[in-house]
Structures are given as structure tokens and as C-alpha cells.
Image (cartoon, rainbow, N blue to C red):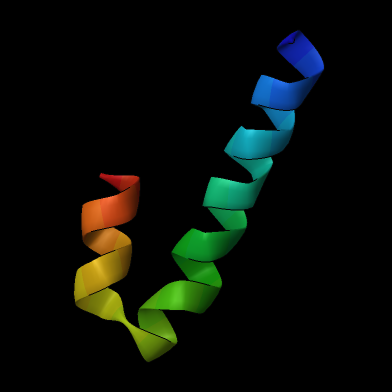
Length: 32
């Protein structure tokens, strides 16, 4: 469970850098 949560956090961090290039509005809604 803890490992899965850590994986999810890392995924969100990556999305913060990659997603905004394609969908800045959607990424902000999904992450924040």
C-alpha cells in the first residue's frame, strides 16, 4: 500500500512536467 502510494506520487510529479505542455488546464485540475 505504501509502495503504491509512492508510485502514484512519482507519477503525479512526472505529469507536472509533461502534461502541462499538452493540457495545462487539465493537469492543474488533476494535480492540484
